[in-house]
Amino acid sequence: MAPRLPYFTPATFRFLRTLGRNNHREWFHAHKDEYESRVRAPALRLITDLAEPLRAISPMLVANPRTVGGSLFRINRDTRFASDKSPYKTYIGMSFYHAATRPTARGIGGTAALGRLDAPGLYLHLAPTGSFAGGGIWHPQPATLKRLRDFVVDNPRSWKAATRGKAFTKVFHLAGEALVRPPRGYDAAHELINDIKRKDFIASSAITQQELFDPALAKLLVRRYRLMRPMLDWLSASLDLEF
Image (tube, rainbow, N blue to C red; front, top):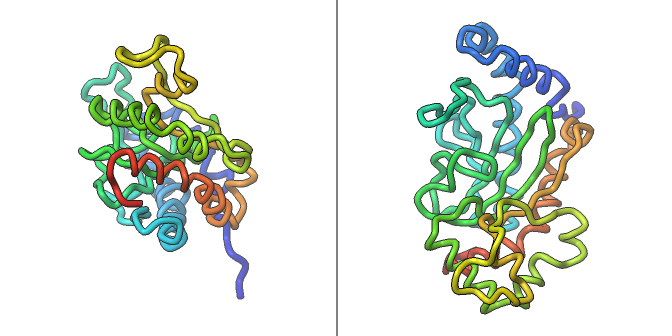
C-alpha cells in the first residue's frame, strides 16, 4: 500500500502568502491551477475523509465535500459592505455544520453565522499567520444569544462540566467576543458572569504547521473535535436541538 500523502504542504501556505501580495483577479486567474491543486483539492479530500468520523461523534455533524455550498468556504470575499475590496480570502476555512442548518456564509471566522438557524458546529481555519480548529456558535442572533445566556444561568454545573474539564482545557480555550459589562437583566455577581457576557460561544485550539503537514491530520482533528462533543451537546440542548 502506498504511503498516504499529506493534505497540505508548505506550497499551500506559499500560495496563500503570494495571494495576499497579489490580491486581484488577474493574478488569481493566472494561478487558478495552483489554487486547485494546493488549496481546493486537498481541502475537499480532507472534508471527505472527515465525514464518517464526524458522524461517529454525532450523526448531526455534516462534513460536505460539495464544491459549491458544502463545508469549504468560497475563496471569494463578499466585499459589498467592506472597506477592504480585496476580492479573495487569504485563508482556508471549513465548516462542519449541524444538520439542522444550511451553511450560507458560515462559521467561526467566516463572514456570517451559520445559515438562518443558529446551531453549533465545528470549524477549521488554515492561514500563514496561524491555524486553528474550533467549534461552537459564532455571532448568534440576539434571541439565540439570550437563550444561551439563560441556559448558563439555569444550568451552571453542566456548562462547567462541558467547558472546564481537564481534557478539554488542555487542548481548547473559550474564545470570541464578549461584553465589557454584564448584559442587562443578569446578576453581575453570578459565578459565571464572564461566560454570560460572551457574544460568541466558541472554543479554539491552535494547530501547528507540522501537524497540518502530517498525513494523519484527519485523525488528529477527529481526536480534538471529539473533546468538543460535550460543549456542542450542551449548546444544542440550550436550543432544543438534537445532538
